[in-house]
Image 1: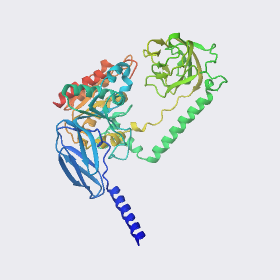
Image 2: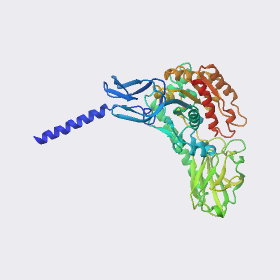
Image 3: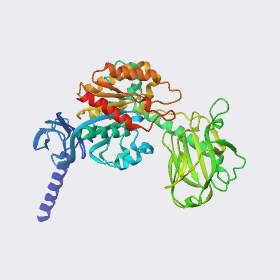
Amino acid sequence: MVKVCFKMSLFCFALCFTLLCEAKVKLPVLISDGMVLQREQRIQVWGWADAGEPVTVSFLKRKYTVQAGADGNWSVTLQPARAGGPYTMRINDIEVGNILVGDVYLCSGQSNMELPVSRVTDMFRDEVAAYSNPMIRHFKAPLRYDFHGPLEDMDPASWKELNPEDALQFSALAYFFAREMYEKNGIPVGLINSAVGGSPVEAWISEEGLKPFPKYLSDRELYRSDELVASIRATDNMQRNRWNEVLYQSDAGLNESVRWFEPAYDDSDWQTVDLFDTSWNNNGLNPVNGSHWFRKEVDIPAAQAGKAAVLRLGCIVNADSVYVNGTFAGTVSYQYPPRIYPLPGGLLKAGGNTVTVRLISYGGYPHFVPEKPYRIVFDSGEVSLEGRWKYRLGAAMPALSGGTTFQYKPIGLYNAMIAPLRHYALRGAIWYQGESNTGRHNEYYDLLTALIADWRAKLDAPALPFVIVELAGFGNPDGWDVFRQVQRRVAGDVPNAAFAPAKDLGEWNDIHPLNKKEVGIRVAARMEKLIK
């Protein structure tokens, strides 16, 4: 009898535990430790629970109670609060801590918005390392797209405080914008960085917002077939993998008895070229894709021998693998990031050292981007890598098809990276995008005005302040001025929008210019005028 009662007790305990687990409230990713809530606006807190489950939200000495609906959704609207914090919020048995109340900004667009602080440390390393501010928080929305409909939540992510370590992953533009705003008014700043490199404007607009553009609705409709998307993705992966397999098999530099990156290899019969010469990258008319090998003997002074160093190889189109004295030093798979490869102590010796670059070109004209740093840097002193190199073609290949980038298709990014924000109160939005639409500047006015109206409607913020960042100067000559005029017209025609000039802050040889500080300062000045 005792055993039976004991078993029944265990069963009841397990049942109660299971029911409690099932009834546990679930919060969206945004409602989490470290978040910033918008001051002086009604604050919406929402989530999911079992149908009919009571939910109590306690915040700033007030309690709010609601029952989850039949679909499990619940939402509570909190009274407006003044700037301050940190505070704690309790939602049933969940405690959300380190909350600030301040101004929250949506920072969206493509790579010049997404670009992290770590990519601009050549210009701002010491400044970033010396600055901390727990009153500034950053939330990076994970990359995701969906063609079926607006999502309720994002993939897991977290709010980060501004400190020298975590700041390296902040959007650089948003980082300097937030610093400027805080230093001027002392209000905590929350940054929601929902940006994707290379994304066109139509990817960020909802289905309703794109109704005047049936071509883009049809484009999206193609990819609502999960079967088609999976098939294309599989074919793209197969083609890419096979291309790399054939390249590896064909590359003499990897298959001769002495590989071309080994110090013992004899490169005396190789062609000699200047690092920025491009005669090797074409056949007189068309580009030569595949693998291109470069070797240089670099003299290291005895005083630097054995010391750790950093190898800087500017930017390379498209990809590279680098070896120093036969030891692998690093690799980058696409053209934009700066090549910064740490060299451990003991690798470099006094006198001659061999640096080998295996450059991979997938399509277009491969080259080393000029006016970037090409050197070996020690704590004190450096050795230049510019000048003459030995060159040899490893394997010629046909251009690799770029494949299908699904996140660039219409509506997908809106559904997965904007729609989940629609209950979160905002102070304003910053939009730095357009490089992917410059070839269609004739339709950008209508698309961008549609995006602004769409976001304001979906976010329930009819007058949401909206700052448009001008495309920075790029290329020599720069042919984007017509597009910039469209950006300026939108900012002038749309109520409560502003234009932040940035053309003069560009770099002719880099689509991602370093000086995001001045851009951030200019955006802050325009935003201040809009929110007053």
